[in-house]
Image (cartoon, rainbow, N blue to C red; front, side, top):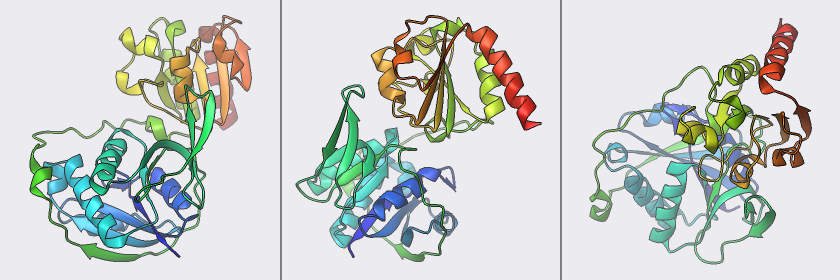
Length: 317
């Protein structure tokens, strides 16, 4: 059975659930080797997080170069691992860091790349939703090792656990990957809500909030959800750009997406329409987003959300 590589995804020193999704998708193609790129001295700690049953092997590479040189060092090492292991494919989480690493690896390996896949079959055929979500395509890399980035929350991860074998390896970073140095960085601020791209439930606010996200946040907190925002809301300065959902923001695929006061411009739809269930709350019955809705509420979000929040909290108690 051919080996398939995944790049283990971490926030800080904690593995993300996206790693389990990558492992589940990769296991359709062969035995899964999870690559851990860790700062010096932290490899064992990182590897201990990888207990997903689809992962059969963990390859740990420790180096402070991953901090000093960032994505270029990560891509350099992954390219060397591909040259050594000759895997059937490499799967990486489809976020800003993952897509940049994937692109660099593809160039170094002279391989084809597919980004933002929502599924991967056993023969490495990737499914993508393109053209603002209007078209579904199936693509396959025809040259080199397939490099595929997979959107979080699009593959249902197996819940089984296991104990993979762990191997430590050493790779030298090439001089060409040391031309840019990371002088400072800040870890993402982790509040009490889930990270947007990994959340199972997202409640988003748009122009209809008039800049007041209090009702949106309260409803999100009652559900244990992440908070998102439309481009109109972030451009107006009502909510941080890091929470923007859309073609120029983050692409999400939660189990439940609640859009509050969002009309549904194609830019926003492109970032959320692969959500499993979509609820739209808008006082405009002609809002385009109702076309995508599984459930729609025609009403003022400031009247609807407090009642919904009360109802959820009552059920929980």
